[in-house]
Length: 107
Image 1 (cartoon, rainbow, N blue to C red):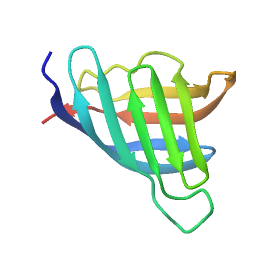
Image 2: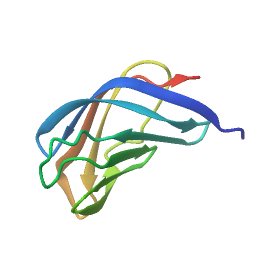
Image 3: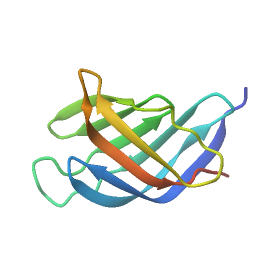
Image 4: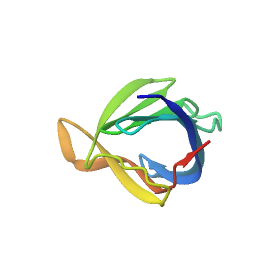
């Protein structure tokens, strides 16, 4: 299937209790999605980096390292805003990354 450029502007993201608005860009098709956003760098030890969202997972890369998270439910994209939660696979009771209002638009 052909990959299509897509984006989701102004999604509210909470990462480890810190909430921010992020603009995601990436590729999607009927079976897969991969969106990337840059994290703001306010100068702290864990500031800056990237968040990569995929259908069943997310990866957060920051100066201190990288963590791979599992989606509580597969990420869907239908043009309507959706919410998604991502957890550490070994500790699924705690949400590490929450995304609210993710509205993926095909370019």
